Figure 1 (cartoon, rainbow, N blue to C red):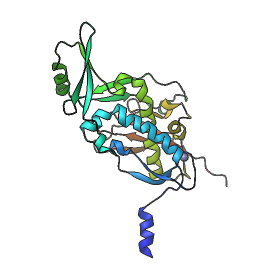
Figure 2 (cartoon, rainbow, N blue to C red; figure 1 turned 60 degrees about the vertical axis):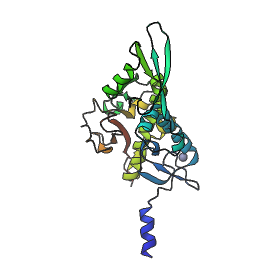
Figure 3 (cartoon, rainbow, N blue to C red; figure 1 turned 180 degrees about the vertical axis):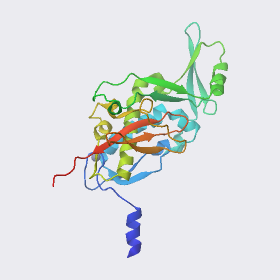
Figure 4 (cartoon, rainbow, N blue to C red; figure 1 turned 120 degrees about the vertical axis):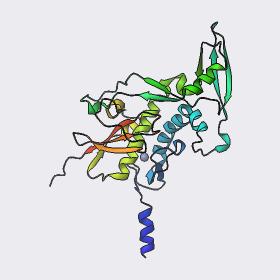
Length: 271
Ligand SMILES: [Zn+2]
């Protein structure tokens, strides 16, 4: 008798779609950080089919396009190991505007990360919600020695470019990335708080119906929060106005920490 009871406790389940509230058959487990980005924490029976389509779409955009080369280089998990890309293209441009595209084996491809720089969440700096999106600024984070080696293959070239989708068009990848941050905070919220007390705020951003992205998701600079330690991936905090937030440290030491406000206290129930 007690064995069955224990088993049920270990397999803690939400039994409601955490995005749209659907209750019924077909709910699937939800990773906090996508499997493709190395996430192992999960929540059981937490997402319906249609919400899963939405979240897996923007996660695939991030995993495949923005961080495809980085994931291959560092052997992040994939459900299709045989399709793991073993070479990536670099475009060299010469003074006469001619160019050549060269495929580099993954060992020689620089493990460069493109890191989105975001202002602090507007809610933390007294801004009003706005659907205006912040200007996109991207930092290139990489190993200088690796980058020099790529340059030296064609010393006459005036420049070379990664062909990762995000390198080509940061706008394309920035918003899937921001929605992925919102999703991570939202799933984590459901792991640790009682929703009778906390009202989740991120459903609309995740499902694409709320455009006020920069109100709840941003960078850590300007928030007065301390940067997390290298071994901390998700750090909860409470704002001065009692909102529940998370600092997300997805690739510690490589990507900057991001800050997401996930919930606010519900008004006390009327007696
Ligand atoms: Zn749903």
